[in-house]
Image 1 (cartoon, rainbow, N blue to C red):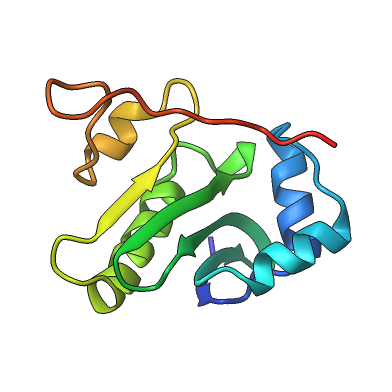
Image 2: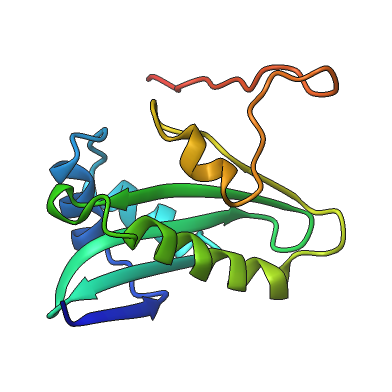
Length: 138
């Protein structure tokens, strides 16, 4: 493997292609373009120039951050690419987040143990209620 980790290199083409490989929800190109423009940070991992992993961070840039789209193409899963993505995100957050900042994410099924290695907790707990989500439809 010839791995290269590149900050803020996520393009709509890469985003759509990598998500398609893991059967994640499809979004229209123009919608992805706006979403990426409004992201705080993104990271792409390449192997010999081929995108093999992506992730991005959204939020207000200081108090609230949400990790989105941690995606690794199938043939590179279980090879620490996800950990490389998360480590890079952690570096970004260590510089951007204030003390006590809220950093959230929604785990895909079966991945909670992966995120626990980075200090995330499963909800609900005695202190925190369950995470919730709503998808907008027109």
